[in-house]
Length: 328
Image 1 (cartoon, one colour):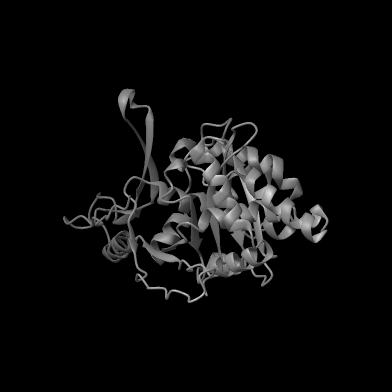
Image 2: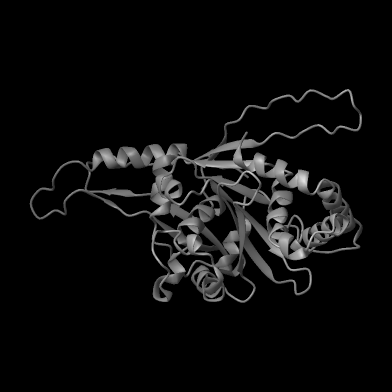
């Protein structure tokens, strides 16, 4: 069973009415009793109400269940699509190592392909060293202030769900990703457990604090980019109907391969870079991958981000161009 599906099972067991209660809140949005933006599946305040309702029934101290609120919000937002994204290994490494442009507007983060995406990092050495399976990413609209957030929910070992932890990144007051990362770390860093302070195997220094989560947001940005290369790989599997009318049909995760074409282009570019330059001509090399922001629409006010893969320089006459398949 996939890690996000395991976590889904754990949380639905702990909060057996959560899925139905979430649909009830969604119905209230449809009728106009509650309002929030369409890009948010369910405000965290609703997840909080669900958690409080359950722990009151059990007589459990709220302090013990407080961390469940953000985690449950991630699970509930993931359930409608159950999308799992696996990156081509070469694209993954390239994205992980990108020096993130801190001036990228945060509005591009509202182009996620689904309400909540699970990014699978199993088998990726840097994540394995951190004992990180992957993470959920979803958007939040504060029920009281209307403030916007993007949340990362990290999945780490723990059969009882204890390895899952959510960190919010406030984006209501900032316009640039660099500002968002820095302000979040300024607030949260003193309270992080040591293992999260060591996410990149070094103690956080405030001078470099904004770099801590840049690798994660580089992956998120690719899912939000204009020319994202995403292909559904999991087969559509039929689920047998239960003879018990009260038993609901279980939705299965949908798996996506990210960057198959562009990963191949990166490998070809790397292979083409072998050799030496001639005369005063610059020696063959690969220009680093990076993100580029374009402004589109009326008055060029809408930001669009594109990932520029490693580019071969002075390597023959034939360019290495990736084939991109667009997914809406």
